Length: 126
Image 1 (cartoon, one colour):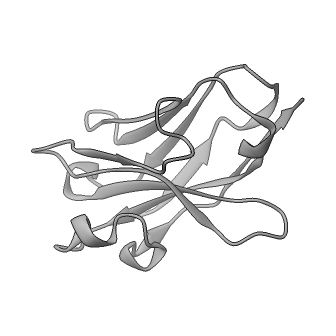
Image 2 (cartoon, one colour):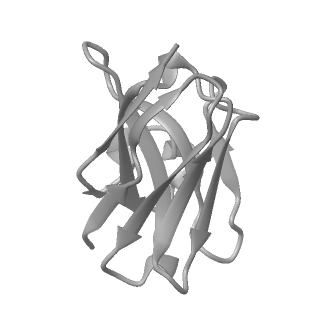
């Protein structure tokens, strides 16, 4: 499956933005995740959502309550709604897809994902 994340840009602190990630395959077969990487830092988990049937979502503590992950299987697209953005949210955001049966234990680990898209840059100014 091929993934393409879009929607990044330059915003001010407190603004909202929605990222989208379109997949080339039938997305309902995949668990989906968002990760980010800031300059000079390691890639970190942001949010994930299980494949259709449960739509259980997981969030990193530093985005919980501000970010919401959702999916539209009809559009083969996963979204990341980001509210109350902070300068520390500045990073390249990547979407990823997983087929692992052990997703509940790997959702926040990049090794749990077999497919990655190119990132989209988000810059939050103070």
